[in-house]
Length: 337
Image (cartoon, rainbow, N blue to C red; front, side):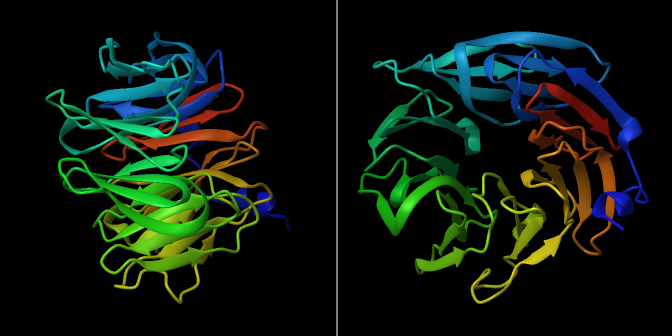
């Protein structure tokens, strides 16, 4: 019996989907309250209301390269050199335009309304009050991550990470590890910093003593990784199954092996952790979406495999809805409340 045969017997919530067809591939998804926001690869955001109404909101004059969201707005960066904030009413304002018209490669939404973005080797932070600071890093920024508390930003780049205390006058800290670091995540308690590498591996640091952690064994580059609520597990893509690294103890995953759940016939492309429960949404390269409860490995079918890879997953703040988007523009919201 194959994996797909056994999945035919598991519980399903497929019938709770509000489907949506976008005119372009979906590169990210977010929620503003109960409104699902799908970030398209070109120019626009697509809004889907709980009543099923859709709106297309122009945001950029070209490709959208990065996005992030807080409770009130989606912040996006494009190859037009602009950083744009769009609220739940569909109102867009330009937060910044790069003076050199460089691509905005990465954006991040931080505590207290702060926003960060990168263009080449420069990183910028704007506070909610409008104060703006800039920092040069050793190479092109590969990813940005705010610490959960305080105004501190991790900037991934070649051969390590720069830790920048935005309001401090001192020089930023450098965490060194050879190789190209392409993404960054801080644990919810702020004790660990994890980066994705160009090679099929993750790297991490325990910030208290800068102890290195290398998480390898993947069959592909890890493009998506997310901490579960409370930070007990780090869920990752990069394999044909969900890989979960334990972060319960003071040493994190050091000396430990990951837990493996939800094996499939296709690669895991995207993971998104539930905001209230230890449940992970998993999107696969064949269009399959599964919900997996970590405690007992129970699975729920959220979307049948339909061909195009899943490229975006996002939970609403309550966890009552899950948005998904695919490379071919197929998208939707699954109502779970």
